[in-house]
Amino acid sequence: MADRGRGPLSRKRERAADALAEANAAAPKAAAAAPSGRICTTSALFGLLVYLWSWGFLSLPLAQKIAAASCTDLENARAPPYQDLLQMSKIGHSGSHPHNMQRDLVGHLAEPRLSMPFVEQLPLTIAPQIVAARFL
Image (cartoon, rainbow, N blue to C red; front, side, top):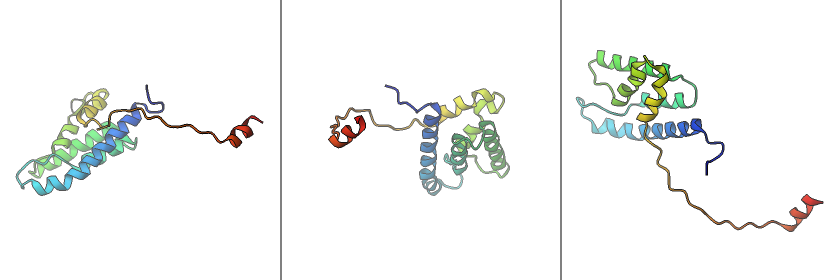
């Protein structure tokens, strides 16, 4: 049974919120664990871009251009780019196919971890005064 009121936009927001939470949780661990010459995979900028895009504050082509510019700046500074920013800079064939950007980004984001659905029996009791008041 489909959940009413939960369209693709709300699922996209949930995935983006999950990605932002994972990025925020993993960023300090990745920074502490990675030596200076190693490539880090988690970027706070990536989490922020996905968050702003998922809530509609930022268009995806603009987020892709920001990610590409940050990768260029990191390469100019001779620092290795973050893998998630590098992946975001390449969505939509590096911006040349903007109609494929959402597909590419959503494919890059992790699927939300949800529990299996279950059925719960709930007792239904109606107060006699409320029922009588409604039908009078």
